[in-house]
Image (tube, rainbow, N blue to C red; front, side):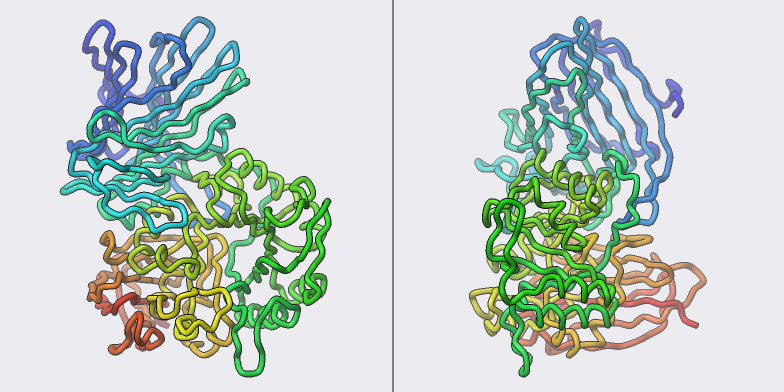
Length: 620
């Protein structure tokens, strides 16, 4: 760390009681202006001299009057290695403004870190007595701003006017305006902010302004707020690959992470009732052994056994279903190299969380899929920490606290369902809502969406016990399903269909089978909000590319600028067939091969609900 010169960071005195501080991003394209006037902080954010966020209030309100006591600007440029993620290494390059305020023996510090692609702002506070109050951060936009945001297990809000009467949702929020970059607002490192819950966002009284607020009460002499995070990008698909939020999170607190293995999991829940002609899948030992055999044969690391594997839970013991020999399933999986993730339903019985993690570890399983915990930060933090003590990974189900960045701090949090999974609700999950989720909900970190259904005709015919209940409402193609598994990042990727459906399309399944869950490099190739998204990811020398379409057929051009120069690649291209359709002919696809190099262009023709997937290997 080193001090900036005044030429880089200027302190502008505007009046005796007003001071404005200017902080530039490392690439000098963005600027944060922080103003202190009449004991109130406000900020503006600009990029390329265009205002992204207008003059807006930010405050840690504790009922005390503070005086500005000092300022300092420093720079940082370092790299770190995540346990798993979208990148093998992550660069943490930012410039930081630190303002110190005092009120008697109480002190608070305002920190702002400006990256080339985003901003984080938080307070640190030291108090002589119990402190309570609010952390408020406003965001002022132009009146033409359109909002997208998370709405629980409903489809994300779409193009809501900031001037409208109703703006009600949960983070993240994505803001779209004409001739300006996309902006996303969320938070990070609530793990370290032990007295806070997730921020709530509402329309402020100030025109064209959103306000994020968190009430707090702390008995500690020292505490920190979460980071209020603002991301910006020219195209929406770039936002989920942004590393600002994880850079702001507390570094990994686990001494040993060798047991945390990202990978792919077969999942039993959506297969129940599937009849292959000789065998019907259900909640029983035979079904699980068949799935373990398939996973082992295809190099899949996990089997997730979902609800109803037990009938009773009381005082630290569970009664398995009479059809499930769990010991045999776990031992068989271990012998085959397939780890078991086991569901826990908090609403079923009075088992008690104090027994949960030790008990699951005693069963020999690798992780917990935890259901019905609710949006509770303290619970989520404690649950993931306790699970780590017993070397258990965690997948949260049913609307958990997002806690963005926690996968860096506690990487045993491998994924969670901060959205609706594919087959849960057709009104919530359509090709169009998928595209919004791929930008909005994916901002919070690893996302369990259960993409990868291959037996779409069977699903639409109502041949699965677990839905969807209304037939002929699943709009997708098998190529889109494969591409979705790549576009959505997750530490454990859930494949929800029957082994037989993957075997029927073994050539297309090769794209999914070879795909890892941890990447060396990820690129947001192209995207247009509500229309399509294209992502490329690299593992070793192999590139995977996936495009997902809306319900409107379209042709897109994909330039292969991400490939290594001077190399020739063999592209195996999986595309929707000419007569494919997301409703009427969902399982029709074609496979072709061609040699390509950096800068070449691939033409992707995608049908309604369709997609495009490409495997790129260096030519011999």
